[in-house]
Length: 548
Image (cartoon, rainbow, N blue to C red; front, side, top):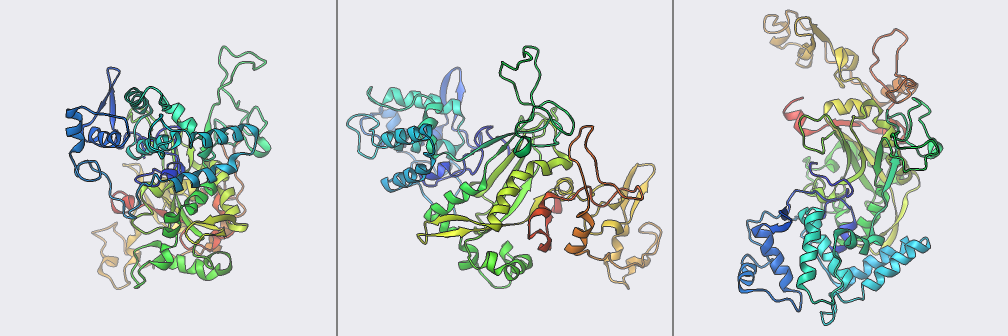
């Protein structure tokens, strides 16, 4: 997830309808940057210049020189060379800048007129949809339509704000003088402001003890570690008259409005039915829907979930990253991604369809206290499961009550310990064997090793009696007993932990003083169905194949 822009996070739109630019407002800056700012001038790469010339030619009243016309005519029928490297879109979704999509976006924006300010923004946007970009242009080239098209190209190609601003300035000079094209990225985004999705900026404790929301919303310091909510600079006075800076922030992007936008798109609503209507069912495992856990949930929760194939199945993944790309820096920011398993197997892991509901600010990793940041997401998941949310299905053209279930988490091994609360270090580090891991401490290397893997072969295998090739012992024990979900829940349900890294935090402990198998009761146990999942936490493929 490198190169994520700080203020635009969500689904990366690539060759999709104009209104989907705002379905998930995040883009991968630098993924395919179309321009570099050199000495204050915009320098476009050759392939991107050809693409832009093809776009500019379609705008009435714009004339190009012979050199530019020659460059723009090169390439294939889509306006760019075959070697530009555009990613092929399996669902064959193309951009449609027609009037019907614009009307649909305006209808989506109507629900934001909850107060006078938002209503004024919406009426301004409606006015922009009828204002021509300049006098004498084609009727479909309204201010709103042109801005949407340009922003879609910005999102599709991962352009930086600075390069996009200089492009707008260039286009404004090329177009007739009476044009109303915005002059900067900020002004362009203000045009489509009512179409934006909700983003919550939540204050957090410096030591990861609490989020300042709900009962803690009005507090000035953390009730656990007594740390201040704001940074105390030398210029701040006691009355707090100056603007105070927050010590830590978590960005939350609610998933419910994003699911609503997805079902409001006809093509995406159809794709959300693929797991049931178009999936190949021949007993082979190609998709999570072919697994036993999917079938078990369908049988157990037929009335709550499986009666409607539009109900959403998702998985959660998270890991730390350094957004600055500096290897000498220990800064750790944690994005949380959500994968939708209703989609085809070749699309569900595409960046376009991955949601990012949480971005946990650094500089330190949350560690075992990551549950504090999961709570806003868990509240939405609980609402989607218990009550459901009424949504519009553009494919079937009807309203339905959408429900959702979290099928598990996908992380690396250390993060699995943070999300599940299970111990993944020391003598009992195996999440499968647990107390029967059988670790051995190496005094000279000062680290544990795990040599009892011979328990998993058959009892008459030669390896069981081979002392010289292993640790000098004969292995006669059977494989560890698999612990059921109910047994694990019985062990963690009474654990009481006060999150945080300050003086008031407490960790889980046992009466014997030994390190417990579980450091906490994971926040995911609050979900009503979590106890019924056979596999709640999985390791990602890279670490399974390479460096477990």
